[in-house]
Length: 272
Image (cartoon, rainbow, N blue to C red; front, side, top):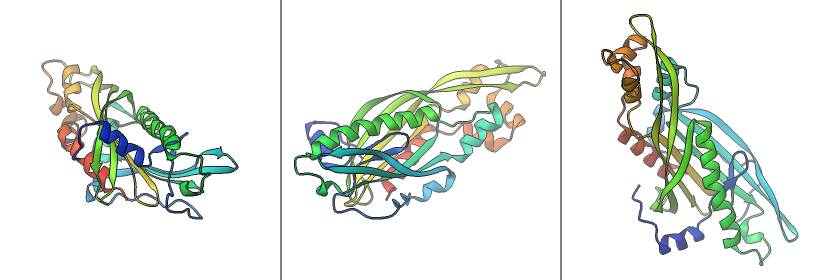
């Protein structure tokens, strides 16, 4: 994603951007150039890499409402959440997992009235500090919903997205708990459980009208390795998964994590 290392300059840049915050769904601050009426438009993922990802949720609502002097501001949001279909299906077919760690979400957020219509004594930094912290916390909550626990910020920087805007970006780490059982050729079963290291990326920027928030997560080791460690030495994990499901399922679980990282990075910067 072309991240620069975090520094005083990047923190200053971050304060110039509009970050995201939320309650249940991700919401935040937007509309610096004027508000709009009606529903918040859906965020669009413009990269064709999204073709392998399945939309799992499309939500909208009021993220929060807060008074600034005599003005009551509402933060409206529209969020689309995706999962990488091959891995989600593979985990479901093998261990019955209901959540996949390979996930991505995009949110468009709109503050009404717009920031430039709030009382003059309301500093942008004051509002920014509030919603920026909320953005990372809500992203952690989204990851927990997908089975990714203990997400921590590992790095912070800036990046240029495809629209030409500058985004504040964070890299996070966490763990995905895999828990299930796989039948063996002798009729017994082997428990497949373990914690898989995960990586995640989150970006926040302003496009001149709205704030956009995008991020995703992925395992940093092939999931098939967890199967391999759980199965008896005499049983090859890819062979066992192929017999249990099919070759495509085994291939999905053996995907190189660098592929997911590249997907998430390219999807993130393509959101508009």
